[in-house]
Length: 177
Image 1 (tube, one colour):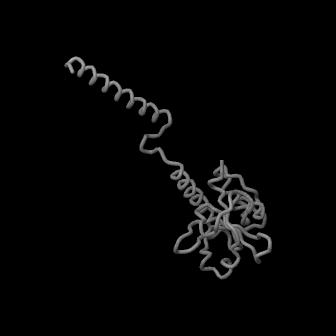
Image 2 (tube, helix red, strand yellow):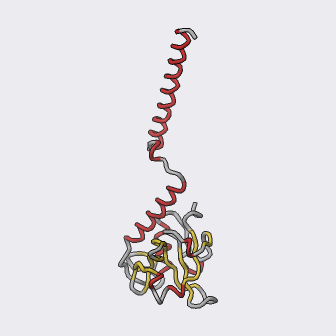
Image 3 (cartoon, one colour):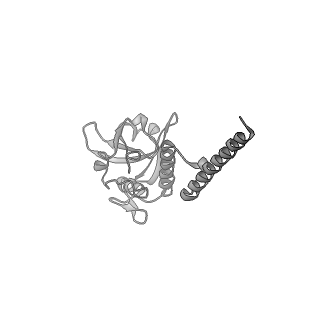
């Protein structure tokens, strides 16, 4: 191969690299993201779930109010989950009985942060309460919910009141638009 051909190959390789780099730089300027910050769908879902729980925690201590749907007046259980999810464009009914039919049914043991847990007083009874999963690991199933004590976090596995009433779970996060 002649020196002239080698020089041409080096020149073309350099131009190709320059064009490729400038396109990446242009893409990052347009999207506002560097290539290192682009996240997989799984990473985005984990981030969304964390953001949902962080937002829900902002209302710890808010008072309970029957049929309440906002922090000023107070929340009931489904009003709380409805209000939190609305911030993330996740559409939920304001009724726990209706929320139990939204999203995808999952096993309680598989519930992740942001998923909803539903409670019944008996196996055949109606849903009477909904809570949002904060964590579900070897330390227990921790939920944030609005109860007569206001918005609190409870470990369901350590509660003699709540544990026997756990019924179903729904994933409303990954099925969201």
